[in-house]
Length: 94
Image (cartoon, rainbow, N blue to C red; front, side, top):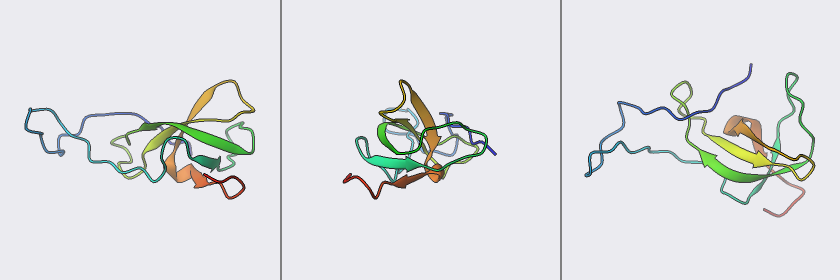
């Protein structure tokens, strides 16, 4: 099962003083950290380390699983992956 990442405004989130909605989100990884992408049968991805490039808020479908834009040096493009499919790399100091 592939998870989808995206940003959707939540009605249950309290309004800030300026009237805009705030997203209370915590990410386990930070920009610049090195992670490993969990192998997946339905996804072709290179093995090895990926760098966290951007933090993406979780979608309403799975509010506890925020997403990340990640990049491998072996690929020319970035990919999006949910936090549940990433682990901190043990082979590289992050």
